[in-house]
Length: 330
Image (cartoon, rainbow, N blue to C red; front, side, top):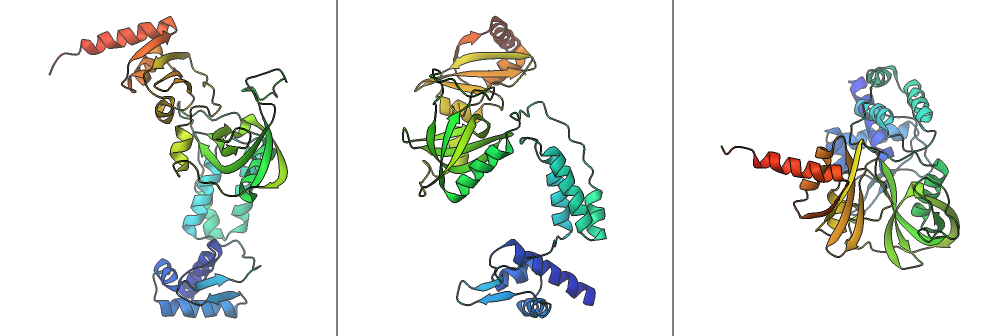
């Protein structure tokens, strides 16, 4: 009985540390006990020296006192989640592979023996899928600068780097020498880090690859703006000019599609590039392990194709079409 009460009190303390405030009914539901039992466990924690504040009113509840630091308190499922997260974290930031391994080892030494055994039981071997195209690792300093600016709503001044990471020459018209941007959202998608920004120079919402920025923080504060459409995911996925470049494949080809760039960009596979041509047309550049593979990807868009390159891709499209025409009727 005592062991059960102690375990429940630790779970209660972990819940209090994971959120600013908890209504009594939610704590009782999470712990699967009565509200009276939760009150008794709260008194137990107070008796052990933990500062737990009662918030009155219809939106009231309980919270840990300000400035109170919790020890490492994980339950079994949290320990497994951390072990999995650290071992499967994508290598998209420079020099973090050794750090994640050291973080896992440090946590394993800090938790109780039973949780350590659970974490050590999950030794994972990661195999990369053919369609995983993470960008080259980005500088942790750049990521930190962008993340801090997003959190504190500070304007950034940034150069747009070339795809190879070099800074543009002054006469290079394809890249702006310096842009003043409001970074509103930091996004990870398909192994790439993006930042959704409001460009103060041309007053447009844009999506930039973080690894293509050379940011310089400022002290200028900006206010919240509503993103067009209000939803980050479709905005990022339908933006064709994110700064992506084709992934390395055995075969790479392109075609003009009778569809808007925003539609194609949302459904194109990772590692492809969509170029806006006009309101109703775009060019898709994509790779695969064979020319027939690219032909199959193009066919998924169910639209007319023109200007197909190179000749090997055009021949593959015709060959696939003849193969389908030859399928006998059931």
